[in-house]
Image (cartoon, rainbow, N blue to C red):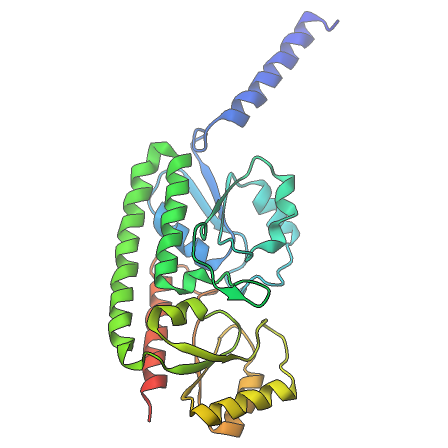
Length: 294
């Protein structure tokens, strides 16, 4: 049998770990929240703005594009191990985390896209929900509800912040619907399958997607089919993304004299609270210029 002093030590240690493992988020005075990537991080910035004790960080670098082929670094693993809450988009976007999260069973994961009406993409589902302003609003609401439930001491502040941001999102949505109404039904060509939710919001039709996966190289047959489609339907706009190479788009533009415009999927950008809104406003102006041309 253990000596009394040793027994008391081990009992005290066990009680310490039990107490801390059961302690609600926020009870230590600091909540370490980790967002999976840029759009989720910006949502979280708005929801947690001014909430005492919140330490928010972004798992991936702000210059990282979509996470299809993302590989975790040692520094990323340190961030995960130090977090109490992980905010993710879900819908398959963060599949690179599936095996890793099994190593952190105490980490609370809040999925932003939970309950969203997802669009099919190939053999799976399209995860780019945040590119719909309605989708982004639903994701903000999910994240805010999850954080308010975990950190009940500051629940009202999370909800108030979310309500303020949701009002901004819906104001912009109304403006975009109104200003893009003349172009409803327009056919567009995109690179990367990031824009189906965006197109659905505004009644645009995606005639073709040239690079379904970022970095993939379309073959000659695919390029020829896209060029034929542009000529047949007199498509006005070809949209590329700032995060990826414009090489294939340049070939299509040269063969069709179709101008390429940049439409931003909001997967990278500055750190400001209104950064997502500013990206979407720029997308609005780009669409008006592209679709309004003769």
